[in-house]
Length: 118
Image (cartoon, rainbow, N blue to C red; front, side, top):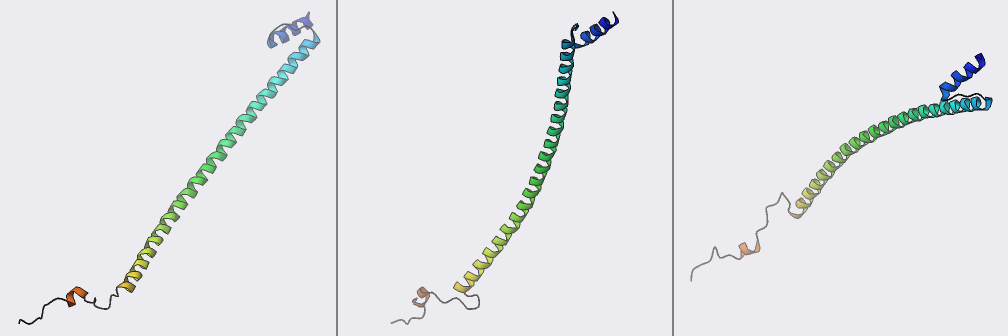
């Protein structure tokens, strides 16, 4: 009777009365599968947490790189602007020298400012 009670207690834990050896082993196999499934779930959660951490680290790295590149871009744009102004200034000095007086226009030389009356 004691053996029968043990089987009933064991059977009631697994969801029913199990009296044959094959069925008890089947319950143990099911418990083993459930334990493996639980381990797999835990490993999967840990893996997902590591993946999220890697993703966050990668995102921070990209944001840092983006900020650095934006700063470098600003600096390069300022350099381009300065060089453009410098080139324009040199071009204007070549076309219209700053030292010399501007040459009189042709229309001024043809005006009748000093003519005699007849």
